[in-house]
Picture (spheres, rainbow, N blue to C red):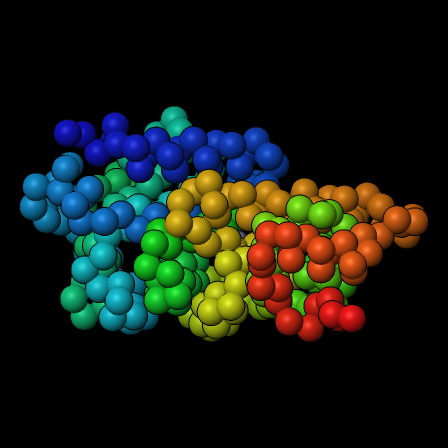
Length: 271
Ligand code: 13P
Ligand code: ZN
């Protein structure tokens, strides 16, 4: 079977096209990595034959060694993936020593994985340990989320509270809250480590003045988390300075009780 026809390539091509049309992924903005179980890889590649090796530039966590990832390429445009997946995506296997990505498929024009692969792989390791069903790390540049981060202190309790107080869906979709990083140099192992550290407690992490990361068992979960933050940030920004009806704390507590959710501590005072 041809990997180009696989559901994995189809899913990533369709969601990146969707995200481009949301206006979130200008130029080469955004990146996605999709951990694919070996049994599915074998349907397309009966044995490992590597096209070339690409150094990672850091050492991947032990839980990721021998694992396969479908990853967007660095410098590639989300808008182009659906037209030419083989040039814009790559399928890699993490080497036994965690230092190399063996390329099985893709990056056809000599490219390589996203510059944010440290943040992706470090986040995968943390999320996988928290939840062995996690498969997706998704990064994008949603406009209103970036605006909201610029208007608030880089503080996850404040950011989460403003989201929960703006849209009744927010606490239901992300009761564990949103992790927030200050503005940092991106594409580094340092921002990767900082992101992964927040991913211990959150499936969502914002990068102030840059964008957001979402994690999920599948593309729908990661995308759904991010689109709920972005929709809520849009509500927040459009009403900024005009709010008369902010969601009362009692309603947020009531929603959490109704859905049996464990809320991020310190955001809403339980009376
Ligand atoms: P890449 O083109 O390397 O994926 O980088 C895009 C981006 O969003 C940087 O944060
Ligand atoms: Zn980015």
